[in-house]
Structures are given as structure tokens and as C-alpha cells.
Image (tube, rainbow, N blue to C red):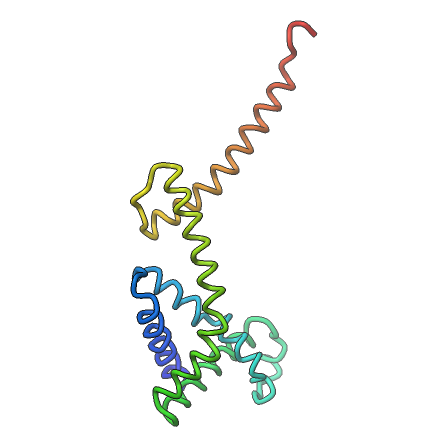
Length: 171
């Protein structure tokens, strides 16, 4: 059931993003979809819907309150989506996913993605890589931004240290 629910969830989210953001690139839409359907969000939704009240888990799984429980909740949520799809059909399942997954979480994910994009665009504009939008270049850009900040701080510290070591002739 989890397998079917996962497939339906990805289809509904993909269709929603495709219809509502026709001007965005495939890479951007894929990234947003992955953020919406990840285990962390699904587990959070399952917690909000109080799935834990209805799950019987072994003592060993109950001890592992972090990751194990997290994946059990996410997988259970996907199984519920599969059951809704089989029992009520695509349209009702679509409404359920829009209500509990897309509407409550999409805005924050878009803000996060767009702020990362603006950092990358700012880097590309500043360092002369204006036409590049590839994921590889974006990763390099973020790494370079971090490295340049670190490197400029390191250079300033070295420069300050060197200045303190060199005594002026008038002293």
C-alpha cells in the first residue's frame, strides 16, 4: 500500500506543480516536489493527524523514537494515501494531498528555494557567471560563496596578524 501511496503522492504533487508553475524549470519543480514528499514532512503530517494513536509498534521500534519512528510515520502516511486512492479514487485522493501536503507546506518550501536561488544568482552576477543556472554550477556557487567568505576572513586575520608582528621603524 505504501508503494502505491508513494506513486500517487508524487503524481498529484507533480501535476499540481506543473499546472501552477508552468514557467519554472524541470529542475526547480523536481526540487520542490522532493522537498514536499520527503519523509520529514510526511512524518510531521502524520504526527499532526495523530497517527501514533493508531499504530502498534514493537518495543524495539518504540525505543528508537527518532529515525525509526519517523520513517514508520512517513510510510504509514504513504500507505493511507494508497488506501484513499483505491477506496475513493484519484480526485478525492488529490484533494486530501492538496489539503494536508501541498497547501500547508508549499509556501515555506518555495521561500526556501527562491532564497537559495537568489543567493546563487547574486553570486553568479557578482563573479561573472550570469548565464549559468545548472545544478552543478549552483552547488559550486554556494560552495564558493562559503569559501570566499571564509577565505576573506582568513586573509584579514593573516593581514592583521602580520601587521601586529611588523613593527614600524618609528617605534
